[in-house]
Image (tube, rainbow, N blue to C red; front, side, top):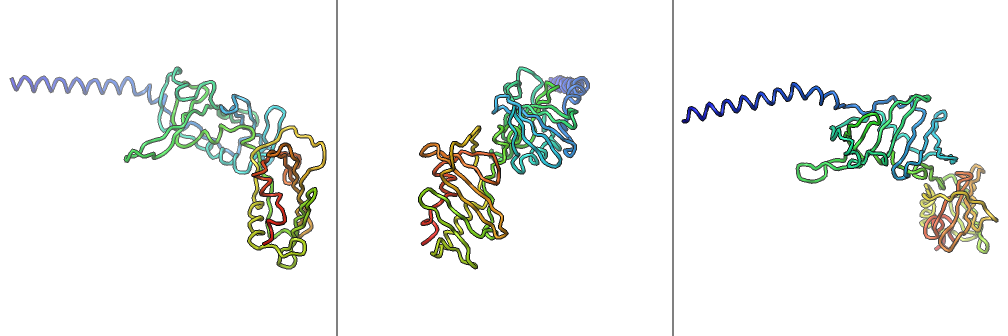
Length: 311
């Protein structure tokens, strides 16, 4: 009986091994032919245009076009400067986008991984020739040995394929961006050491912050060193994130600031009131670009009163 049982076990083992071998022989070539490691590999120096249809913009096409060494942003009839570093970050992804694994071959699963028709589409060109075309899906997270999050991945589908792959990282954040997300948000760039004086022009309380030798004055009163430093920290690298489209001024700005540098160069910032809380702002750092600012935000930081500079 024991001898018979051993024989049965041996036969069963042989059958299982045979099934495994046959599955490798007949199935592996098909699987391997569809599993790709490199999804996108591009010499980014050759890229001249990137067309995006971001999911968050409901398919509105956005174009990033290289002009010389700079990039410009286009959408419909709008054109704008691109925020520094955003294109470079995106190109870093396009340089070498690799698959971790294939997650499905089924078209009916596209929406599950958010790589269907409503997902973010990325098309890359070099002098009119399409280099790659793919969709960016949702992001997931890998679990480490301690059940904590060990990393992120994003689902990717090439436009001419049904397969969906996972790729390492938060890839969607580089491509699923609206027109305004890409825009340069520069409002002020002011280095304290380069400034000779700042003229604050208000309807009833204008004043000048001026450096005499190495001391700052508000009129004839010495300014507070800490308060002056705090103000320059606020305007040293000032961005405004919301844009005011189609603004046409119906009069002079209510608030104005003139920055006079030690070399005589000037920069300006202006503000028009819309409501008690909302303002329209512009500056010479981006001529013709108008921003939406709040009384408690950019207005409070930039257009200060003289009492905020003296003890």
